[in-house]
Length: 317
Image (tube, rainbow, N blue to C red):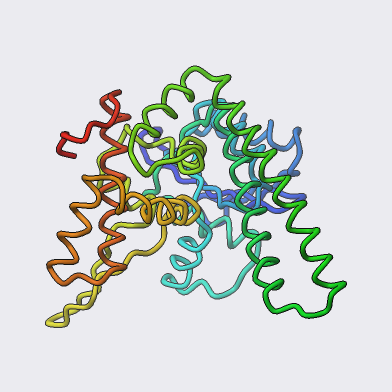
């Protein structure tokens, strides 16, 4: 194969095995154990092949050790959303599902879709992302039990639900303390946290979520950033039909925290409040106006991190 010819590799990850395929040669197959030895062999092979892109699906952290190993060697690995790959597979008519076929689909996805190459997340940021994820799961669980408590009548069941909610409250409080400690111990994260929280409406939870899960902030334009978070409006047009634009995809966990924060921002942040009232005055639905305000807030946050400058009310973001 000519060294100048683009090479695209797909790696299907399962608990015990890693299956490799390449887009230009469907017969080419490699299999390795999903352990330290197998990952080491894959890294060595990838350095020899020098692929243009290597695509790995997000599979509940089973791929984490492989992803870190490839990033450590500065190999062009793309960590992609499984839904995008499944939609791509259906579009190509791949209805069957095997590990080898999945690897080939990933390789062809790398070739045709040109996914974004991942960047290595610093160790502290990765730790913060896990703490934020754990907190989000506990909060979701607490919401479920609070809702159940409202419709529970048996006294013993109510006692158990109340006790569980109190335990979750304590665990969330301890996580908040650990998150704050982790941010405070890292000079870069502490500085970014101060910049983010200088924006009215951005509190500790949103700031930690962004620091752990949106490391692209300040490094890319506001439009691709909005798409990453999943608040960029997507057209639904065909011929003369002009459908309603909708948001979809993106990092839902970041988006949900931003929607919570925007409820405060539209009341107390003068810039966001003015945008919100302007949209409502133009007849926009409340939800549409809130989504637009989330994009506005993202744009402000992107600018202050890019320019390394705290938010000022007079700025035009």
